[in-house]
Image 1 (cartoon, rainbow, N blue to C red):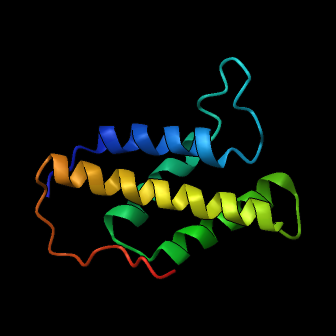
Image 2 (cartoon, rainbow, N blue to C red; image 1 turned 45 degrees about the vertical axis):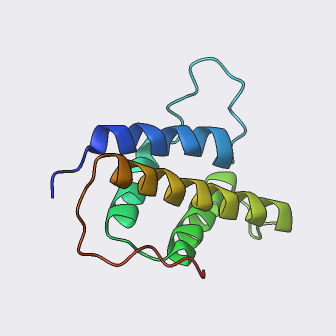
Image 3 (tube, rainbow, N blue to C red; image 1 turned 120 degrees about the vertical axis):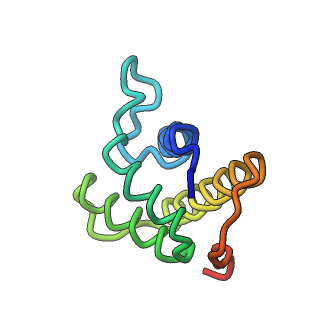
Length: 111
């Protein structure tokens, strides 16, 4: 499948920067690429239609690592879930827009 990955890569980066942002760098000049290293992993997760719960777990794990926190608070969990919802929505919009055929199951919305 030929996937317009540059659009999805850009959109994943934008969602991480605007919605996830555990380092709280959104208001700093030249900080847009702060989460760039996580984009390929999330891209693979979306394209391979892993569950939303797996993506949430990945972002929670990464957030714990980069913030040094042991426990993610409820508001932060809500932010992570909202970020994953947005990532899935972006992926689905790109698939629809480009009429990309997929034999894979849709992303599990239960998690």
